[in-house]
Length: 166
Image (cartoon, rainbow, N blue to C red):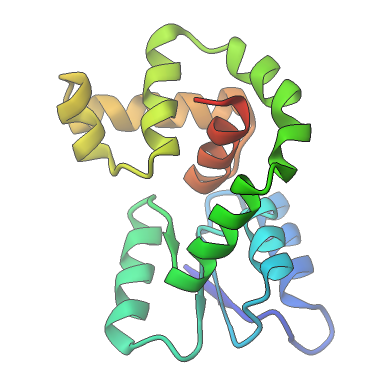
């Protein structure tokens, strides 16, 4: 588990995040920063961050975010979530829609169903209940989906699901 700030000496946190994702894909990384601008949130997620939160977050929120990321889930602070929702609602993601639909078309119907629930932000247990499958089976599908879509984490897959209109 790695916590990165946006501003760091030598290499900025977003560049470090991209390098970390390439060099060690199994490492989970969260961005913890005072720089919560929309561009930073979106860049962090696109570079493979498992989450984004601000340094003024309560200690319990930080602990919850680390636990969620370590378990393979994603965590976004309320401010970061607002930026992502605004981005999606603004239609800027529409330009990526055709590419997202092409990538998602390669999935099986069941994989698309699991991906759609990722796009809704459901944890594995809830997705399993909705799809009448075990949490372990959902985890297996999520792993397959991430590999097929070449996504580093659930957040990237969820954004792709939204871009594809799932």
